[in-house]
Length: 107
Image (cartoon, rainbow, N blue to C red; front, top):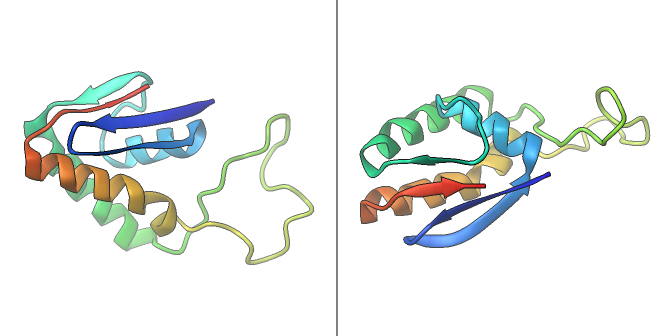
């Protein structure tokens, strides 16, 4: 599954579903897809996401291959995409939406 985040203030961002749901939960949202944030809720969600990234910046946040449990066996130690890198596009989208007082939606 893919999840696309949309706002009129920034370009659409598409992520793997499990990565997107994890980021939504770090923002304090239920993780439900589809969903939306009202403009007045964006600063708090952005602050929660930034705090989580600061606390766990180097932790891996890679999608789990379908049909497997955990990391794939052919991935070498240290080869992953960190939470900080996965969250950066969403942080930029939320920052732009907050500045423009715009809604953020995802589906």
